[in-house]
Length: 368
Length: 259
Image (spheres, each protein chain N blue to C red):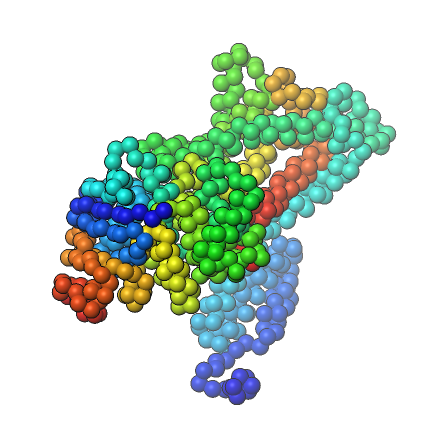
């Protein structure tokens, strides 16, 4: 007990330790020296951060090496590298969010942006709004509708196929040749470039319904090709981690296999399956290339996926940037494109949050 | 309710590997029979053949006969699912269904099979099964809480309640206490003694004191070496096995001397 009370006392078990303020002191040194060094080569925020990080690591690690010895110094080096890697990963994310917010907030907040389409909006209106300083007309309502409907149909088609495939692979396939072939094909499908999926859907419908068949449903089929392997993979993982003991417990009660799968295995894995599906949706909602090839480009609101062209947010952004409504004044089009990009990012973020929420809601309860 | 088991010349294979060879044993109704023996000697494998649970493992197959009151479990046309509703099983690790409440876990055997129960029938099954598993007093106030929130010993008794809720003729237990502390073990052993009055109980255990405490008859399994099949060496009254065994191998095993 006395040894704990006199923690300052040295014994055979104590080692030298860096003072508590050491990381902060090293950071301060890093920032100051980093600022000086980056000024030498021409100051920039990026250069400052880079030099500060390098100097901080050098100071902190060598200080630790001098006081605490080699093992602790290596530990601190590894910690610094891991934190550095984390920062490198997170910076682009924040940069993207910031840029899209900055560029898109004006278009996003323009009245009518979310609930009007581009129907009847042309270069004349854009030139007028630039010349008179009036508000930018035209919106993304038709593109939101298109994105939601196309993704909805893709989900409705690929979730049953993907889920049933993964059930076959996990519960029935076990080492059979068909299961191995399916696994191989799913792997191949994961690697299909999205534009090829679009070409496939376009060609399929051109063969069946004649060339030039471009509707929202064709785009859904293209997205389905991209979505099925993601759903199969994530559901397969989730079904595999359901303990075999639960299946055996059900069998031992005289429960049939299909009922065991339906009532025990799937409910146990449902939280992972549901969040995997949500992430698969988030994955395909931003696809551009296959929709360009399959859904055409509409400026009007279209609620019917089975006839006529349909817009979607990614293709909307693409066309606004590439073919501004008014070639002499592209400003309004660019503003609309950024606004649409912001909405798309919000969709994806909401879907990711929903995935986490879904996982938590469906997770087996463990309360006492 | 309780039925006798007669096994005639049973061989168990995993693929081409003979895991258990030539077991013949007669188990009386309303008794507790313990299987003892070193790890890997095939006692769990053999236990699983008594309700065809070994078929869950790919390529496992059986030669010979297992008669449940004279009905061969392996006769052509026998449905393994039906067999398992007559011969229940409790596993080494407690495995209540994590998505279900305590009540639903007890009713799992009925509900998972699509059976419909009135409220009063369900309540009666829950109460009688939990009473039968000595768990009622501990959980009666929280039947709607998840079964995975119970302690290990309570979970194991919940699994026993789940097994007796489908009213089997035989209960197989595969090392039911090996994951439990001594107090929970005692609770389960007391329970086994009570279950004997209604069911035929077969228990695999590594704990020889446990075999001596709970069982009426004991079967000793052994294996000649790795890759060789496990065999039934001796089967007799528990007292005989532990005090006066006929075989040298049995004596060595129960007295702690090997080889």
